[in-house]
Image (cartoon, rainbow, N blue to C red; front, side, top):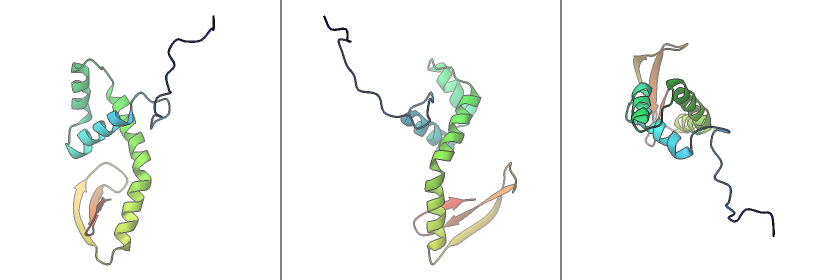
Length: 116
């Protein structure tokens, strides 16, 4: 008798965050809820807890920070494409935020927008 498992399966897809808890689909859902739909992390945490997946706000925040790191090359390419356009629109309305500059603004061309 051979000593091997009865069923062989292929390895799962690579996770975007090595040794991370979340799949790429979950991370996309988390980022869309936070940045497109404006659902705060504490409310996302409550939704997950109600669904039977208790997770800390720090875990979700850390995952979002890693997603930002993964998306940074794409963001930098968008910013560069903005600067390469012949016409650029700027909105210098100050949005108060925490951080070294204390504000954010928006640059836009005919195809994309970037926030700084």
